[in-house]
Length: 370
Image (cartoon, rainbow, N blue to C red; front, side):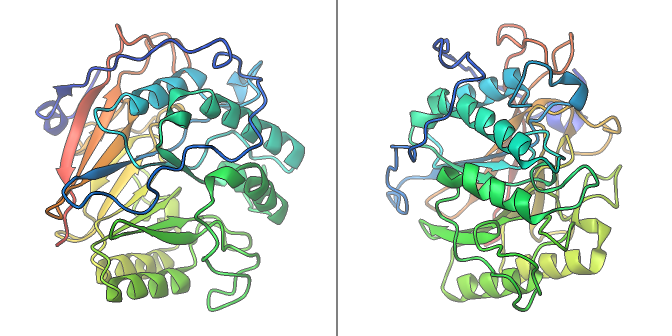
């Protein structure tokens, strides 16, 4: 595997003793449970003498040509590896933020979209992570909210809210239709925020109906200002499309509309936010768009076919599958690690046994802004 020189120096072993999945876990067509997940441990507090962590990953859907016999349209091999490995981390993460493009979507057929989402849920709910105490927070990507013309539509938002309801339970305080951002639909459970152990988390729908490639910047700015004034120790934003995309696709993500993107970024900087996490670009990449200020961390390497324009001469860039773990320490310092494994030689959806494709730490960085 090719890795940039800066990443090579930070490689360390990560041993994953993943247990074999049960027969039910191997059945991609199993129906998801209808009940809300039973594990809800210590939702809002942690021991102040201990650290806590959260995981971000996105973009697990396969290409359209690879969906035969796979109702979830997920990269099943990589999804199962990721869920197993997160469950086997030395310390249980408090949250898994899945940052969009779980499924192929891109359809005006909401029955098809619902089928894909339910099948994805079945895979997740059969995994060891679903019962581990880590809380899944699902965030929509453009593939879940847009049709084949790449335009978000209200029925897709409603389908997402209905099927993924157990994993957006913290939503509800986001912006309604209208308001300062002149929203076409109610975004209160798509873009919203919540507090946990002194940190303020903001989830972002980056393709709301009527305003694709945007987030409701007026609401976000007011929310961050309020959280900062209330003494939030940390601020983290998570959305599907990055504010600052991978350098080889400079006008992708929210950068398609720079003025709106800048409003978002200025609000994050004003709130002393540590980072915005995203996906959309199928690669791992992190950088500080403005030196010394808020970080942008792209964790779009969840299993979708990797970008063809990955440039390994770009610092902190890598072509591998994995996830990002961010740890908040009692002293207030914040660190992120990118865990990764090589892409199977037989193709991106091929089997990837741990013995041949071990997961290691590929990059690490301190995100602290205080």
